[in-house]
Image: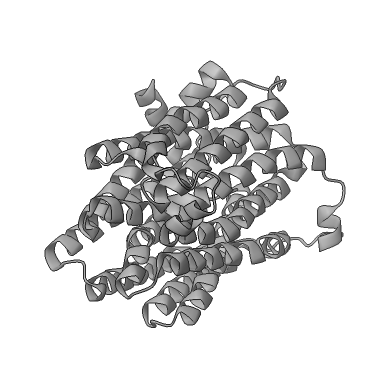
Length: 442
């Protein structure tokens, strides 16, 4: 069945327009650059003496940048050509990362992290309407699928390359900075295919302002879709960005092995994406989302308590596969339960709900890592050795909080939509990237 799905995707590649193919190429090249930045940045910030709590603040400013421009950008994208937004996202992303690498000032790093978040928001919001404008109905679902695959593959290759470089040259701050600067240069080259995109003028209709954009929405359904996303985003913000630091702190693995673990995570993400339509055919959309999220929780618990590196890596990879089965099905389900003219708006609000949660919880995750003992002293059971509960450090504590949030999110999603009687799956395989929210994956 999996091979049949793969052949179907390849057959539909020839249907893509020139603009769609240029977007795929730009996405792949951009992922080649950003993958190594993602896996090495937090480790680099540690190397230059920044505490975990302040690294959490850096990540929060990144989420705040994502949040700040999501809705304004979505409103503007209804009225203008999209090529400029794609180029601006790539340029600002490069500048935002380089800015963090040329200074040791925490204040300056916070500012440039905000700029990088703005760039990420532009890229995330612009891709769905661009695909809608540049594909037909028959190939659209395949285009979303290819975007997910090429982005994940590019990131995996980038992380493998980063691991090889740090293995050969070491993982000093100078080496990590040099590798990430190289990643920025590669990412900037993604603008070349995007620059070749040709777009027709956009007709600016009446009533495309901010007030009309919010009017007449199905707020009840949109709210039900966003609440679980917010809860999952809160849990993800506490833990997901800190996985490389968790592996380094608890198990002492160097940057090169961290990069390879992250690359393996990206590869298993592709398995999760590919398995999602097969699971949805059997269980339906709602049960697929809930089951995959709940099944990932035991592996998260293993990550929290284990002191065995191989067990931790296996649990991390299995957790990623399961959470990434939920991700595209959740996106597809959201597009199914709202009217067609509200899909872009719903996608935007889901993005806001995800990134709003990250503004707070990434700072909290970094604080837990640095101040675990102080937090434990405030708890009612402070006189009990934390290891008796399986809490070994601040990472364990944040993971147990994340598990609780995931349980609540899955339960709420099921209670909201358990009576849904929509299509059990689409006619074509569904592989929708999580354009509505951050990927809950390393």
